[in-house]
Length: 324
Ligand SMILES: [Mn+2]
Image (cartoon, rainbow, N blue to C red; front, top):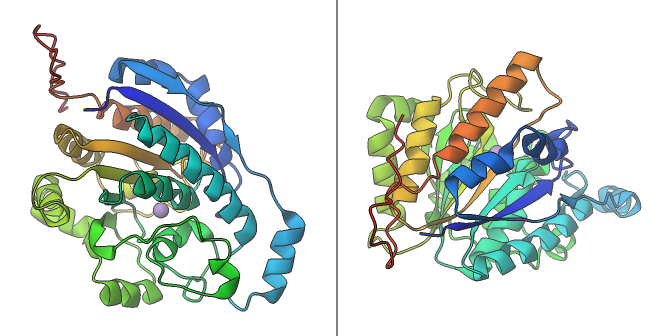
């Protein structure tokens, strides 16, 4: 169980079109994020915020020559190349790496870093969407809906390949999406083609989160040996719990379901990293912001080690189970 946490603040927003996700790490810190983390981990290593540089000219030239759509592609790719190095370094220190976004395009960087450090890592992707569009299938052209396709190398083009050489290939059978309920037409085809497992939020309601996460883990990691990464998009939860996000869709996971999921994976002792993305403090009323904040902190508290057994743990200092 990793007890030292590295906090990476991925202050990014250009993977989609609503400014504000870049402000989430600073806002969360201002509202007490470090205190919440200190309750949950023994040591916190808080790295400086990683800001974007908008390469306007390069992005514009790219857009003029590219036949499909992927807005700000060079800027997003270069940001994530940098982020991947940072994540890889921190993973190699055997720290728990929590990356607070940012929009979900930052998963290009976090997953690349995590997979370079541990190629066997299994990914649990909590999201209202499946984020597997390519620049050809995407209705919006926003890269936050495309990270899985780039990671799986489903889209290859000399213009994008040139920027994506830092991305290792993610095997589709090493990722499971949970909570999806807004899947684009082109994505359905890609899901079928890759065989990626998706549990919709309806399936979570039907079978129960306990069954779904147990099945997901068994499928990803049948021998109970591999590390896990959770890429958590707050729009995976129902908007009643996390309204301050850019692409909210009704009918999501309850907070308790989301917490159970995180606690279950953490209990394996092999959850080594997590992303928390798409929080946008510029969206919603004061009440919406408070609700989103409470939810975010509650999700982070789910990381509290349920049975913090280390070799030297001779006292009965066990942390209590946190299942409510
Ligand atoms: Mn997402």
